[in-house]
Length: 90
Image (cartoon, rainbow, N blue to C red; front, side, top):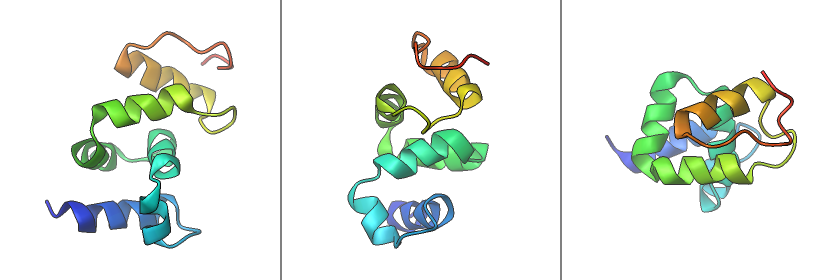
């Protein structure tokens, strides 16, 4: 996999409102969007590029409203992280 090209592709899809270079300068928003919206193959690509810990950290640092309750619940189960007090529940 060409990681640079794949990262740019993900940025164009999931943070479509800005240029990929700006998104990739600070990929936190991109990773949050991936946790919220991504197809399984795009999540796998993101994990290969940025690592599981980066995705886990984005989950833990997500601001209210950045992840819907269903996505928050799913990823907390996937990463083995306690439920957030902010999560509205599944």
